Length: 74
Length: 264
Ligand SMILES: Cc1ncc(C[n+]2csc(CCOP(=O)(O)OP(=O)(O)O)c2C)c(N)n1
Ligand code: SF4
Ligand code: SF4
Image: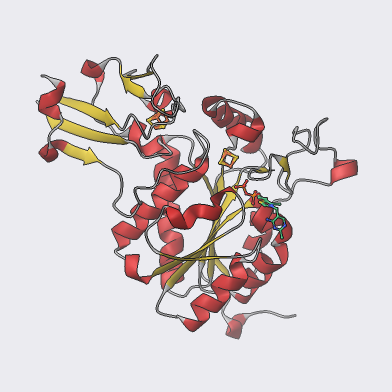
């Protein structure tokens, strides 16, 4: 069976740390950074990158559209 | 496989729609307005109607919608977007016109304008963001506020005796012979967002096909004024707003045919 791997890129400066992407991810890929961006937001990041399947759920729910998603068949 | 081997242009599956400008949205973190803006931008891109679409922005938090979606816009006085859209769509029948309005704008100060535009069957689409509150001005009660809901002007919760009942304006609008497609949606999960995108697409198509007024309510959150986190606000909306404002289509057709319109 074809397996897929995905990866996301978060625009750290545009992210407002709302956390909606974190709960939208079905594979617990995302978390919120302890660090903040220049506007004081805990921007999200891939805490478990190996779990990502590139489903785009996180990007779809992001109100600030700061997630770009990539996917490959392996 | 290394993440950097996945992040390559040929593997791209989702990116910011080109119809959204580079401006950072002024909305609070987690606000539903941003998600709906993104959907409208994607739809305009998908339908290839950038040059033909004119939006009418409201007064409310989304007053600056024109800064974010790269099309032509007009800014209406509070509640008057349907009146402006009437003029624009009648004088530019080749354009696709839509209004974007909050619940304070549409269901309070602008009730007369939306009712009569929908009753006349004006050929534009209405995107109605129902977050149950006046967001921009600091969270006062709106007509759509639920009974018992605490707001800045109902600190003990909305009381029917004092404040009246919550207004299901979308159901009223569906009764009007001028409306074609009337639906209630939400944008709190990926599945709901995909459904909402289909609904707004259909509403735009109805406006393009001159079927009458199409109307999409989006039950939304204003986590800032509800005094919750964005995630809690979505849960609160599901538990408290959906029972009274259930998502789904209310009307799906065309405006009434004058020839068969029954007056007796
Ligand atoms: C004629 C007029 N009356 C009152 C106001 C003040 N005002 C600004 S926004 C607003 C309510 C907006 O609420 P809503 O339409 O629900 O939009 P939201 O901010 O929640 O997105 C009010 C009453 C105004 N700007 N103009
Ligand atoms: S949904 Fe968007 S703005 Fe919110 S935390 Fe995730 S990336 Fe940041
Ligand atoms: S006040 Fe409410 S409606 Fe306005 S931007 Fe903030 S969350 Fe959105």
